[in-house]
Image (tube, rainbow, N blue to C red):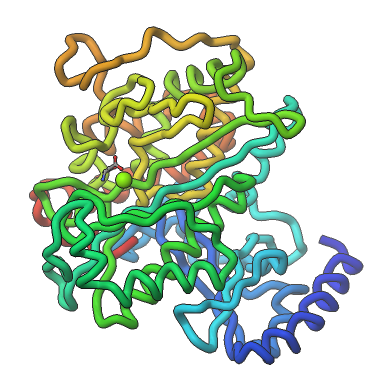
Length: 434
Ligand code: GLU
Ligand code: MG
């Protein structure tokens, strides 16, 4: 980033300040998502926004080695106390937060002090993989489904509504909450497609319209933080954990992807098939990215709609890949402990490898795979996923060796953190973190 670019950003932010002040903004939250999947933040008073846009806000690179419980792993390339990065708010996505009066939000790109992009910047990774797709002639549209449970205040999970799965009762008992949430997202220009009570006690789900991949990951962050804020304003707590309690159905973070060319959805084409076959081939390694926590593997079990099998099907909700004919590919195994930028970027890398290799899909699985011999399970633990990731040349190439090693170090740090822990202990520690 040169001096002219800094000046351009300064001027643009200065133009925005008056409008944001009119909308009662006092402070701007500048967020990024770390490798453990937690949204971290530095905030500036509104009048500091131009300076933040031009020069960034300081943040230590040590966050690249943070674990979900805020402990820090001694990584091979990250984890030391030395150095400084700059968080530059993306002014194209600055949003006044409807659930937090006085606040605006912008996702950050991380640079070093000289204006060079940080090589382990998550948003930069998603952008780089999107650009690779573009070089091969593909536009990508993506979207995350966000699932969460609403609990009463306190550290234990006690559902805040007792209505049945998919039951309108939940939306009656929490009527103002649900309406406030959908209204807040609308005010923030998030296009909600659907909202409903999900299967698990106190669970809801919300999906948003497909978007360009980096934007889709930003939206996933914005939706989650909006849910959290509106839930808190209603005196309750939201958990996005893959496994809120040790038994029962968890929270997913399914990713929808479609490929486009010249404004046409390529669903059903050979290219889309090869893309899906690439994702299928790399699913075990992708689990280290998108099923990022120890708790993920408590969720990723058969007969819990989590997509625990390395297989695909048409409208099959127990295979990791669900093809929605004429529309898109849904990767069901991912959950919200995965960093959405890394999840979408790594999925594109895997799919593109499938296209380059001209892969074809095997026969679809058209029943619950639990009843079919020989359908492989996805990794059974985070350690198993990490091993698959390390051995996956396509994924390691996409991240680059240092970024890949840092991801591995963080994952292994969390594996060690939970060594010998019971499922209850894992669920308890993870419950309110993501
Ligand atoms: N809650 C399920 C999961 O853990 C997903 C339910 C569904 O949307 O099919 O992914
Ligand atoms: Mg769902």
